[in-house]
Length: 340
Image (cartoon, rainbow, N blue to C red; front, side):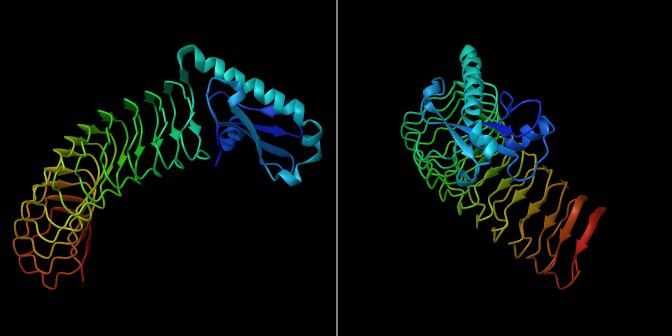
């Protein structure tokens, strides 16, 4: 995985070092400059890793992303010149970011285990990957991140101050509790809270642009969902719908595969993805949406008694456990029907 600020040194070509402002993936640099993956030893990947203040050149360390014991001779001979050129580029990146306190690009800093002493620009237009952080102590995040933010290795929100604006996905899939967690008012992408086992203390934004992953919740107690979810909603381990108030609008799939009964379940009028109710043994009390733009999983039903299917299902219909078609009225439109 490419880290920090990236560049590629080449043995042959019109220039010794290739880089582009805001582009910190070696594969993207190769694509940008039409650099082919040459024979082993004809290219060397370089990275500048941040270990302090983004705006201080001395806090950046050059790292050679290559077998250090097998560096090509041409690189060794010209290493000082190549690294000097790279540092000039890093300095330019710092200067450009300093003008508006904005870094026009993305940063992967997964070599960092904690955020102590790390100072970042107030705004990052791309993504920020801090996957390896195990504590938020000392971490000062930008006020705005245009892309996604990965903090998946945090197990607690203690000391965590999130940006006011996140344009992409927010990865908090390692949190075991919502205690102390203050989320942005709006998240442009999805939100991963897949290790939470309780909604206690959880205050979700009113709007989430992507999917919401709460796959380990077994009860809806204390859960207040957003009015709008742009992607899917994973509540796959809920065993009861008691206290569950679903969003009025779900832009993707809905996974309620752990429900044993439809008692208290009020589904949205329309679902734009798959609907998983595979754990239901009976259709008693089940009121399905008028339209499902995906698959409908009712694979646990033993009988069609009381089952009223939507008029339109654009994907598969799973009724795998039905042993009789008595009382079954199929939708007007179904692409596929899975049944014995």
